[in-house]
Image (cartoon, rainbow over all chains, first blue to last red; front, side, top):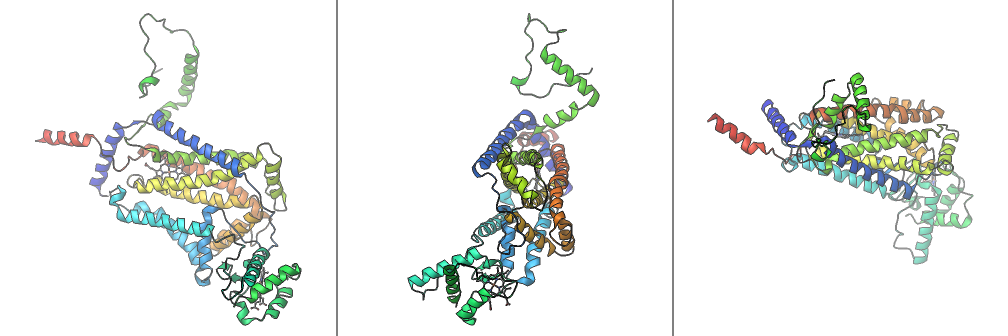
Length: 242
Length: 269
Ligand code: HEM
């Protein structure tokens, strides 16, 4: 905005302001009505959902997969996606949000056109909508990466219905046992410290998988104390991962 | 004492003039007058009323709509967090060895209305985040960050970052599995950042590892450092909003433009 445009804006604005109403009581009444709505919403949310407390923090468990509050889902989603390219992880999780924040911070200094109507600011409109869509998408997919403890995989089509049922039962045991804290299986789980298990059966024979589960190398915990039924589901599931 | 000019109140709120023949209340100290006397007394000493007039009886431009209430709604959510937070602080103990978790258990299970106030604080945080983003969206799409309101915007972005930081530090305090592990990951993300990353995570953890000081640090940051900074910045934000005036919706043009400009041109001719 050059000097003339600034002056034109200030002149128009002072006319508009003079044509307006006093803040008290007109704007205050609206703000007050809005405050009541906000209060009611908060009270209803509190009454409906309370403030539940999970199990006590236990730094020694390795099986708990962290979940942030919903407004950080987008960040966790970026982290989850970028995990698979370790070289870029710090850049993506710190760099991208930092750059976005700096862009947001400096907005009034690089967007200096006098035009304020959004339908005449195509770049701002596109950038705004893109940002909203990206945030909504990341939050949505962050929320739907499933309960982080569940394995979301269809049984291979070669299995008979009975075998497929065992496959699903095994997938559930994997979820309950927290393998995903250290292993990737398909699209699920954390990459590291354990190896990717998506095609484990292609390289490791079933008997060896079972013995690894009984006598693993640390830090992997031993699963020899699982109920035998669950243990066999687990081994069967892993040996189907061709 | 000099009398200040009457405020531009709407008709119904203005005092009605006395009808002839009605007894005048000069001399009598009726309740209303007593109130006025107290206000006058305070004002003589503090001279607050011009400031209050400046704040309350400034004009807002024509065309203001409901989207303009989002800022004050954010402020209201912030106040809700402050009040409910004070009550939680009365029972909370930042003790890693189990005290923190137990104190929250106690708030939820034993304290009168404890779970309700805790819930208001927890859900109030989400409501505030939603409102602050909506408010920012309003400002963005209305182009309200442009001259002369750049600084209001910059302060607003800092408020946004601080609000998110409140969410992050507060999440650890109940010290259940969820909060613990989310925070471990969060701090690790910080640690991976360039330049200040490792220092930031050292500062947050109060050492190289997640230890006894970590929780009290998060607590102090969550309930003293950031809220203090936010209160000051909100003050500056609102001062600027009042000083510069609320922007008018961009599609509203002054009435006076048509006849005013014309009149000017005609006068010159
Ligand atoms: C704690 C958070 C915040 C509070 C309590 C707050 C409060 C307010 C209030 C009460 C107004 C008056 C007008 C309105 O309600 O729309 C306002 C205006 C404004 N806010 Fe905020 N705000 C906050 C965060 C932000 C953020 C995150 C931004 C942008 C990044 C921002 C930028 C602005 C701007 C530029 C104005 C002037 C708008 C105009 O004149 O039309 N604020 N704020």
